[in-house]
Amino acid sequence: MNFIRFSDLCAQGKVAGKRVFIRADLNVPQDDAGNITEDTRIRASVGCIRMALDAGAAVMVTSHLGRPTEGVFTPGDSLAPVAKRLGELMGRDVPLVADWVDGVKVGGKELTRGQLVMLENVRINTGEKKNDEALSRKMAALCDIFVHDAFGTSHRAEASTYGIAQFAPVACAGPLLAAEIDAITKALMSPKRPLVAIVAGSKVSTKLPILKSLADNVDQLIVGGGIANTFMLAAGLKIGKSLAEPDLIDQARAVIQAMQARGAAVPIPTDVVTAKEFRADATATVKAATDVQDDDLILDIGPQTAKRLADQLRQAGTIIWNGPVGVFEFAAFEAGTKAIAHAIADSTAFSIAGGGDTLAAIAKYGIEKKIGYISTGGGAFLELLEGKPLPAFDILARRFAG
Image (cartoon, rainbow, N blue to C red; front, side, top):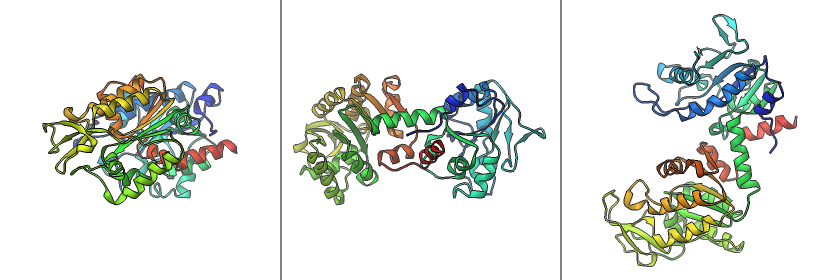
């Protein structure tokens, strides 16, 4: 897709002296005392902010934080801890501005070139989530350039993500959002073949739209976790007391048949790792997929299956990874996910990974630098895999087209 890149505007000298409104994703976890416990999103946002300041802009940055009630402000909803942390990272004071919708001022004066402020939690504003036009127009009036740099909000049409992009003089993608768009386009729209997707999780029902969408495009669809158990049922195998959704067997079978009709495949495990109880210290037993007993829990793929899938991944041209294939949090049941992770890392394929558990697995096995692109979008990433259009992408493409 075509869109205006903020980096291009900066390089072209079109940002100097402009008021730049950056919609970032600074929704970081906090403890009960309000202390930030993990600041990855804040650190990730620094690049766009520095880019704007270096280009000579007056910069406003805002985000949502938590789930505040619109129109009601409480201290727990404040971006104050975020502004403090951003200031520490950037080595400068970052004033926090409240009640900013009708105008942004610092010390009673208009924002000027080289200044940076944080605008208080955007979701406190009445009409934000419903993409209220009046609110959107007020936000747009604050800036000369709107920069969307929060991929995790791209699947929502809200005032600060969509409405402002409609009415701002210029609407563009920040470096984080642009990188997400580029990676997803490369993986889904123009992939190098073979295209292999790994979709894992506890329930088929939550990933069924993704599975159906990918079944029309990928060459191999690797399923894991509870999803794999349902597919094993669909293939006529027994799964004991493992997590599954028997009422979706027909849906799983339809995905298998759709893949087969294209000459593609959904590899079904030939061996598994089982236990009698779901515990970290449970005894792990490797057995053939045809030998699962009624009181068995399948908690990982077996070594034979892991090797076969790893070999396929090393031959792939493009890999999409969403979910671990076993209970990797337990040492006895992590071998399958570990093998998959290292195969992806060793592959020459372009790889894109997303989803909370996937990111945790990547961190656990220390392969961050060997993944082509790691998406932090959560729900937005999943909706893209489903083939859904994202409102933020749509409006930026429309603004590019004029």
